[in-house]
Image 1 (tube, one colour):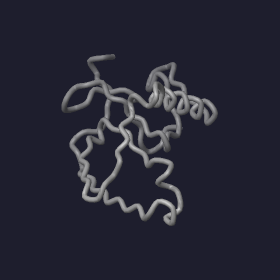
Image 2 (cartoon, helix red, strand yellow):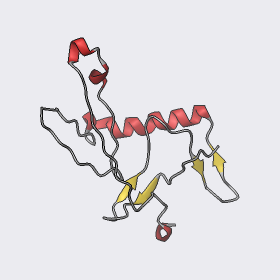
Image 3 (cartoon, one colour):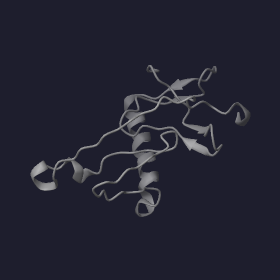
Image 4 (cartoon, one colour):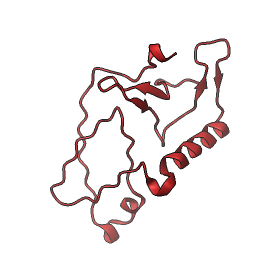
Length: 123
């Protein structure tokens, strides 16, 4: 099943051209192999879950080598490239307010010019 939004798993970043992964760790409904071809195939829930777990393991292996973890301090301000960034709250941020204090996050999103799309040149 293709949901309202579908994106290529890998695409070329529209500004800097680097290979970029387009993946939502918490809200991926499925994967499509050979999209819009005779061999098109959709993953079921079990296969999707297995793939998501495998991707997560690859991202976090080698002691989270690919993960940046920010230690927030009062006044911190981060600007991030959402076309090439995965983000999630750390597990400890979900602890009771009495243990970790109140977590307040203000987020601003700016509508961009580009949606992730398969680089036609790479096949």
